[in-house]
Length: 320
Image (cartoon, rainbow, N blue to C red; front, side, top):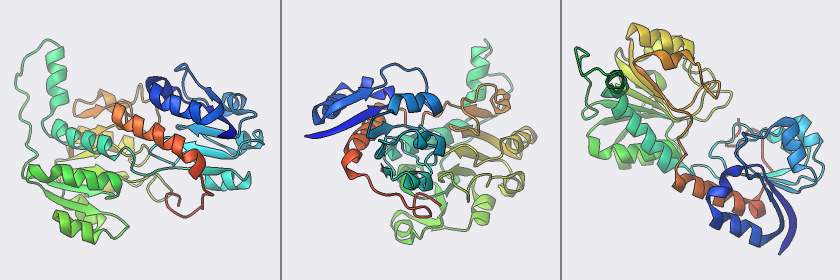
């Protein structure tokens, strides 16, 4: 049995006692964040991790200042599906290894994305809001079916591929764009690989499944949104800061983009975000992986990753 000291600045283990028991059985000294007091960062994170060799984490940030104060830390094992909050150069500077498993929440996020396609096309947010105000249908116009539409998947990695599979019964035309060559997958599943410009121009529904990195931050500018097919809808269950939210708001107001549904925002929590006031915008509080199945898989991965940690390489996937 390893004698490593493990600190877990993540309260989700309290919902999965069997996974928590695996960790405490395997290691002699394990400390958990037991209350949902918010995400530990900066000084609070340092205080919690001081003297521990391993951190099993969610979205905690390991800045230069944090790592400099944790000389005993040797491993950071991620339970998160994304890794954009980790700087590999900083970890390497302090000789800290990491673990991360891509695509571990792909089923949950892909199901949410397809749900939001139907939700947005059917204008359910508007109809539901009207009902909650005590009104019945009235002259609110019509929604649209997903069947027969063209869906553009921007980013066809782990989650994008699951979206392709889930869309099969809907009878849609599927376009996809990715910097990786997935031509074999495209042939197998009837997907047409296209450039980004063609995807924007042809798709009735654009769903974003890109990682957040230097190449994608701010990608969906006003100029890009103007290239989208008039009346299209935009789904983002990937990461915030990929879409210019102010530019999107203007195009939702004008009707150039008929509707949008986002699970992620540039600033989170997104309380007070102007997008949330628009009748053709639906937002949720970053719940893409908030299912028992996804969180169970992510926590198990974090536990197993303690022994599988590796030295991250800047510029090598998932880093740019």
